[in-house]
Image: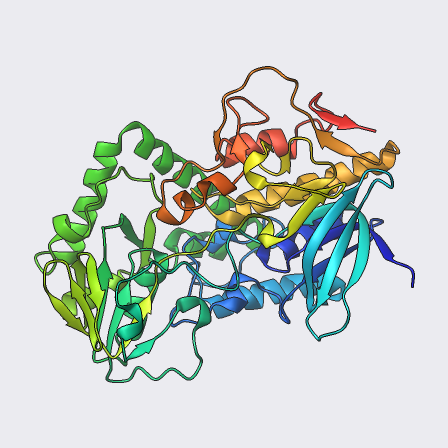
Length: 483
């Protein structure tokens, strides 16, 4: 049986993979490609997670694609709304017909003799595995393990006799009506879950080991609403998108230059919301500076509202041990719970856990130096989408996929078969590719690629800088080696 060969293989049919397919369709219509998806549905994160209230933690004007406006009113959108947007986008650009469901990739090996990637497919239906090949490989698999999240080694964890629910494996039939619910964690998942469960639960307790910076904003942008009334939708979308990009960059840079002022601003905002109902300095005043870890969004003050009305409470303490009926804290306090939800973070995984090899030698992501935040030193014909950690993921995903489409067109025009970012041997300091100090990243920091101390090996995490160099920069920049 002949092996199927394509110009490009995209791995993953989430927001990044669908965007990558759209860019190839728009910019490189003569390039053959397929999107390989291990699961049976598109959507990635937005189809995988099913917990109550799941939503974006970025505005949809920047989390949506640059080429397809977000038209719904609420720009802090539910997972269902985002999934609908992704399905409609895939259908509009014909990418839905390019997706191969149940095609889990186990390994991809670059063959230098034949100048192509050989991709091992593990069918979900139990069929015998098979191989496909491509000229260029683009991974769009996010940055975390889809099989399971991160779970700390809690003392006595297995002694608990109530219901344990992991956000990444939420049971559709979970009944929490009139139940006492304990949510462990302080990140985006916990902050989303708590206000979303108070309508049915007897009480919801949020237990955090340490505080997180939070900020609130309306779920519907009033400026966007006004602009959409007076301008055509596409123009209004671009204007709001530009506003939000600039505002985010301004706030991030201010946090870096004047962390004390931003800390005070966030503390005062939280105090104004909560008044004396919650001790802000205990529960919302982290020890680290703003944007050392990602800020958590509270749309329409939903978490603050349930803390004020008493349907939820927050505790900052460490778990000493699980018990049969709940947990005991290091302070000695006992929390009884019918349901415990460990919202304790993601298990970071680069390249989606695929074994990537060059001529049979396995690639270790931690040994690589990133090029323009998407390609890697010494690795031919490979790009990986890794979105922003200090802004909307899709801003960088869009730039990356647009660049890949330009790159494969350039190679075809000039009859090149291979492109490889090459370090020139000049000494260069390296550091982790991400600057955040979030626990889920620090746990796997050695397994992530590095960045250098200068462009194009440095990842500036700034959309305006990236837009200039990635969207408009020369393809043949003297760093990429073509043959």
